[in-house]
Length: 229
Image (cartoon, rainbow, N blue to C red; front, top):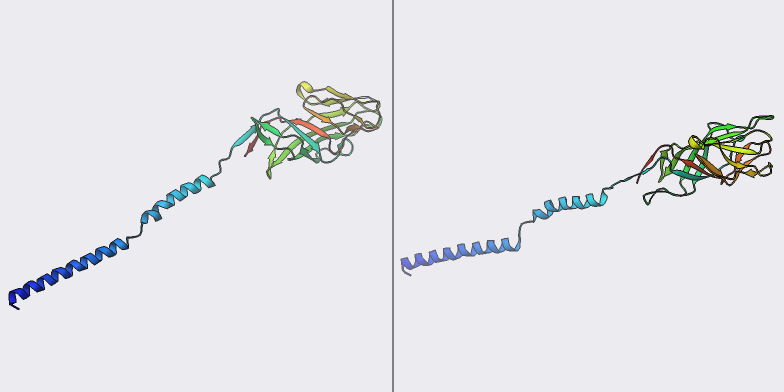
């Protein structure tokens, strides 16, 4: 083969070899694309936003206004003779308390109260006195301190046939009931003022006051109660 044709042939082979290598590299790049970092880096913020939307808890506060009645039933007996001033007593909320259609204090909530005054009737004169107040409610496992009215039930002494509820304010000295027949177990009839007792409230033969278990009592909040939901 002449020398010039040989040179042309070699040059052509080199061109074909280079072109073939480039094509193979391009095909490999197309079939094996680089990893998409956007999936790794971009997904994290979205996941964070999603997690934030699901996990964040937005709490709201319900305010139960001053003067709201809290109805409870006693879990134990309380009385002017059987109780002592400063003694605690347990009760259960008998009716749910709602604010703007939302239940703030559910029925069945545990309540804790304080015997502010317990004075038995005197042997010859002097009536019995019993003053109670609520000081806490336990809602969803959290104890809320409260302040309520402290109505005082009082008899007028041995032989008298009337009773008073001294509730404070306009209700002070209001007569809440008469003793039917003056005998043992006569119940308090009416309910007015800063607090009330119905069902199971009785006077013993010597004019002492006794509130049996399941006696229903009504107290009024003397300051607002804030509950976080």
